[in-house]
Image (cartoon, rainbow, N blue to C red; front, top):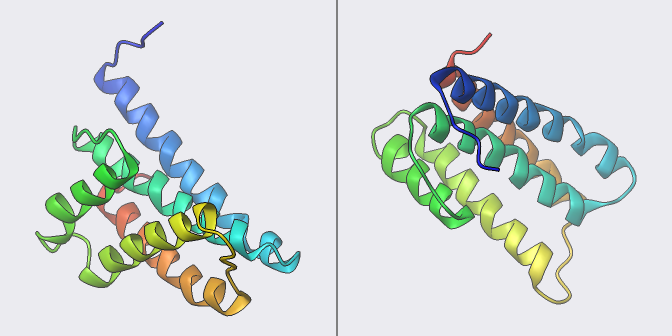
Length: 135
C-alpha cells in the first residue's frame, strides 16, 4: 500500500529522517570502542545520508538512488553555497568509503579513518540541521 503524502506527512518524514541521522551518528563511539571500524564507516555514511534525504524531502527533490542523493545535494545545495564545499566533499568521500568498506575485498577501515570522518559527518549534519531549522 503506497502512502499518500500531505505536507504534514512530509514534515513528519523529514523529522524522522533527521532523527535517524542523529541516532545513527550516536552509534559511532560504541562501534569504535568495540573495534568495528568498517561498520562505523558505514554508519557515518548513513547518518549523513539520512540527513541528506531529509533535506531533499523538505525541498521536494527526488532521488532514486544513493548516487542520486549525492548528486542532488551537490546540485541544489553545495553549488549554491547552502552547504559548504568541505561538507559536500565529506559526504561524497563518505559515500566512497562506505562503498569500498561494504563491497570491496580486503578493505578495512581504521580507527584513524573513523576519527577523521566523524567530525566531518557531524559538520555535514549540523549544516543540514541549520537548513532545516527543525527544533
